[in-house]
Length: 117
Length: 111
Image (cartoon, rainbow over all chains, first blue to last red; front, side, top):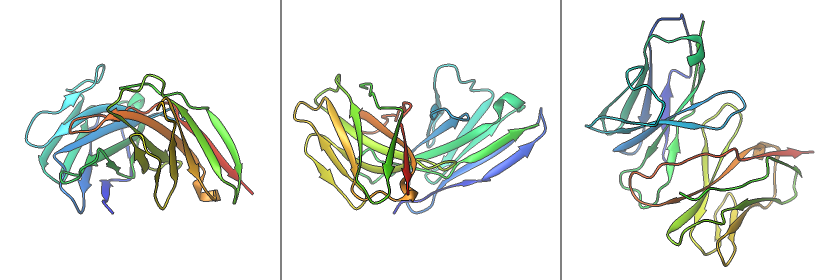
């Protein structure tokens, strides 16, 4: 089956630093990837849609200058949390849609736990 | 996309069938019903989807009412590893459509 990986699986950083999270589709190509954020005991909230070769589309209320998204290839999207603060501590999850897929099925990564001290 | 309503939690005995309901009374004719689940601290996992006919795969069965205003996900023989939050989502197919997660149903499978 289709596999999506994320790296790192967890990261701890100091307040004010930037953190980059990678999302890779391992056995399929994805023109579209999605980034979600999940706080404890809450549901997933879509942050942005990452499009290969073009700018990402951000959901309302998500700061594009704080959450930088780059989708440079059909198998890799990155999310950079710039100048991270404790309130950015969360579980970040990406998903990818198979370019060759006929359905709307999205494959999710295992998530990245970010803790900002 | 149509909104969905699910019970916040359900319990099920191991080995028994788990029936998870979902109401989507405002679903339109070309919207599909998707089910995902999320085991604690993991990414969501696709389970099944359907338009109007009942569907079955190796994980579950999906029963959609004739008027399509509600559906039921059936795990025929629940195990402890099926303990998770189950999300029912309706949306159009096609590129660019975004999954919007509601609060889901926390299924707890017990001995």
